[in-house]
Amino acid sequence: MGLRDCEIKSKFIFFLQVTGATLLVLLLQACKQNEETPATLAAREKILLLGNGTEPKGIDPHLVTGVPENHIISSLMEGLVSYHVSDDFETAPGVASHWESNEDSTVWNFHLRENAKWTNGEPVTASDFVYSYRRILTAALGARYADMLYIIKNAEAYHKGEIQNFDKVGVKATDQYTLRFDLIGPTPSFTSMLKHYSWFPVNPRTIEAHGGIENRDASWTQVDHFVGNGPFRLIYWKTNNYIEVQRSPTYWDRENVIPNGIRFFPIERLSTEESAFRAGQLHYCYQIPLDRIEYYKKNKPELVRFDDYLGTYFYRINVTKKPFTDPKVRQALAYAIDRVALVEQITQGNERPASGYIYDGMKGYQSPGTLTFDPAKAKRLLAEAGYPEGEGFPTVSILINTAESHKIIAEAIQEMWREHLKIEIGLINQEWKVYLNSQNSLQYQIARAGWIGDFMDPITFLMIFTSESGNNNTGWENTEYDQLYSQLIQTGDNDSRYQIMQKMESILLDELPIIPIYWYTRKYLLDPNIKNWNPKLLDNRPYKSIDFIVQ
Image (cartoon, rainbow, N blue to C red):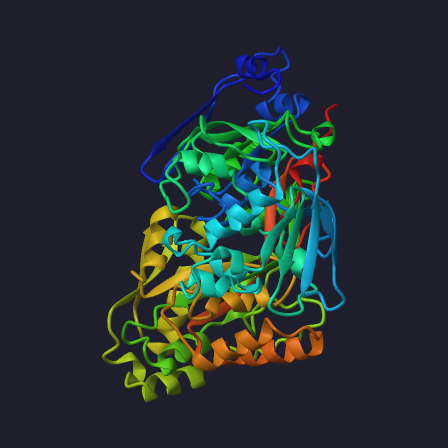
């Protein structure tokens, strides 16, 4: 139980029940005479109540790929470096207290804190990181983010089985508390990459006790077995109920961790989450229903936030299935979308129509994006592909995950394609875990998707569409694109890097295995009692710094 947790739960009760795709959140009773809400009571006890969008697929940092999973993992685990409290372009120390690189940023040394502990009391050592990187690069594990580590010398060769001895991979524990990386090329943004959870350590003894380095069953992540090294420890997890973490007594910086705990609520239906926030059951509503945005803008502006967000909303196309094997079909769909109308009339959250794929706002990078709304061009391309005025176009569907916003956007795009291309497109809705599996196994035709940058460099958008990436999920491969990527990760000069990235993005925008739609903003609701919740481009923040204002 959390600090004074039993007392809190005697004051209010959450009753969460799943019926089909609907999560009902029932507020029963606040026992104080002044009928304070659960959010107020929790704030007084310094416990955060966060809407988290959906039930996480898991919390193994080497197996998951989603944003809801990231929020939970980031509270339980810590990498060599951490998120800065207010600026995503800056890097804060984590397990490593300090670090240095050689002149061309190809060799890095990280110095670990000797007081960094796992939640079972063991010290966090450099060899724990080496084990963790061997694990994520073990092909049998099937980590979809394994390619994130390809920047390490010989990491790709080990992952592909071209070398068998991990000692040849460029990461070494030079002593118990010093970790050395030898990279394949100059990487001045390396510390930014290390913030991502794919670089987080796992406890080797725990992994070995639960099936070993190749085991995917995630039994070690159960509450009774989980061992982390972050500012919080896992104390409760009931599927489709909530996940609770409590301030860790073994964390190196425990004296400066402000919250006593956090509860993550997987409320998939936006209207239910917004109702829970309005009823005082949450401090944070992960996303506002589209039909409520104007209300909050006009009537409750102190509750609503619109933050720039390093991400692109797009549709994936399964290029292995007809008619999408033909680039002209994909191009026709892309040019038939009126992105300006979509963000002004439908999403209404200050999003910007995407003329390209890479988020427009990365320092120093200029996108070559030229996507526009051009229905005449779209009709011509579809006719050239053999479907004049939509004649003979097969039955296909858009796959979305459960959320009213995705459905409303898809319906608007369906209507645009109906009007401008004379084609009928269906709609398939799946809950989060099933939706992810459908994309991973290419069991879809068109799928709504989004990519949020993993770190502050344009390469984070491009690396997922190499033929080797576990996050590609389109079936698309392009030899020139792969060759440019290999050249990119060995290039240190930023001007040269940006030129290579522009070529790569141009290839994507020509062949269009994805259809960019808009550049994200984060639109959410925040309780005024919460402070130190700063706008962040990556929407990642050190939860240990979040504070509370209670009247």
